[in-house]
Image (cartoon, rainbow, N blue to C red; front, top):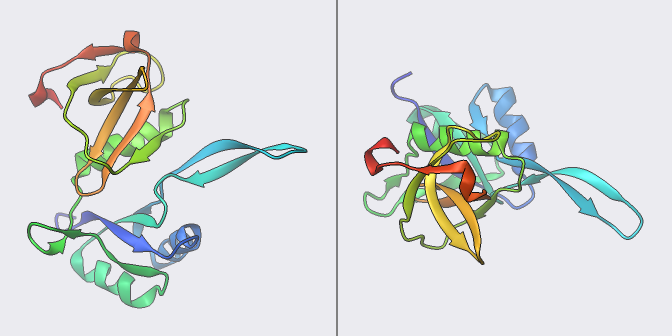
Length: 173
């Protein structure tokens, strides 16, 4: 539907997965960024699905459904607000698609950061499971990272060998 947009919804701590279940039962399209990681305890290792962005769940809905979610699910605290317009922040479809692609196909752990990022070179992944992903090349602690921005929220990053990347022009992103 044309009136549907992606919104970032604030959720009570440790209620993300239960909120996703409630949204599913309500028939609301949603996305909870999860990734499988291996946890090490003193006696064992275990694969667990971890939340990538704590206390945030994304929904794709019209404004009426977004308000209904706020009213009917007590664990949802609010909608992220755009500071410029003072209205609910709308996340562009292209940004969400790139973010979901990164999480679905990355073999490395994806980290999410919300501190400011100065734009770097625009790159496209040309090898490996993330082939086709477009983002920005950044360098953290001497390691190449590809980042995907989610306006209003921050950016997701994944470590990537420089040989897997090619430079692209800004308008191609």
